[in-house]
Image 1 (cartoon, rainbow, N blue to C red):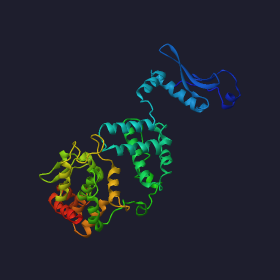
Image 2: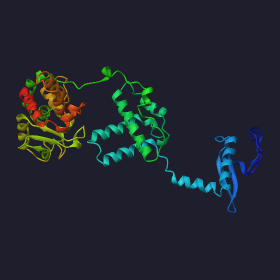
Image 3: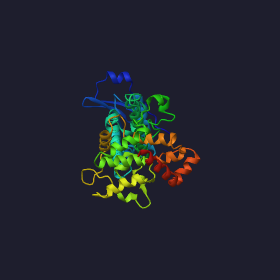
Image 4: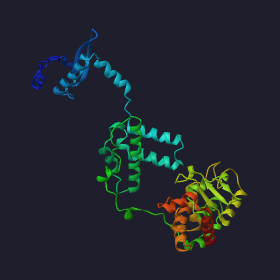
Length: 391
């Protein structure tokens, strides 16, 4: 049978009283400490007199204090010390961590594990969580809500769309990781499907998509002639980039152990590929000639060494070589587009072969079959034809 409790206090009486200690009944008291008034639950456990704070008056109403006191009395009747249980729960509960601290640690762990291919990815993530997510960095990661996510997304959504989408994805991944580690519970407020898709609407993809400016494939022969007259490692790296239709970073990071000059194949390891998969590049006669030239002046493991000891060329160095041979608005990455256009319009290469040459992941079963086999010899014919076109 429960203990009957007679409540003595009313909200009006509390407001009117100046007493330092007011009794409500059942062990519930309102006491004054300094300039504040606080609820406490007084009880006896194992022969000892104990007091447990229930919160300040300005945060806990009379009704809420009575409910808390009632729950504590039930524990005492069950032979449990409510104050000791609270202390045990506090010790077991992980300390609250801010979104900023957790996000920084998430990035540090990714870098340490070698999860990202280069410094650019790390720099982008740090910029996202330090600059764009600044309004929520000081908030506990377990308290982040949809409202908080929208607070950081809306200033850039539709203005810097690519940045805003990467920002959303970064926050989503960070919050999922925090949930796994026990720092938060419930749904992910940064999730797109079934969540933010109903609030934020992506701008028309056709109007927001940007492309790297590309030189027409018809202009390549004349350009390659001019580029051959430009001295320096950067110019040779750009030649090799064009002849292999590779990405700039793949070429700048190439090391001699990846090159098989006998079989005329360049094997780029998964850690350096955007797709995260091994990519074999068949080398044309012209591409091998560039490698032979670099081999003759090799100074370290890098195929195209930078000016600093054992450091690769910078991305800007290839752009500088491009400007030395051409004053237009073409970009280094745009040469991949030129190759793709040429492969379709001139070489009439099957789509899956052209996409495999660019190391693009394609969709249907036939294309995935080519991705598994990589169609090296068919691509070798295509890449030699491309080199012949570029002469």
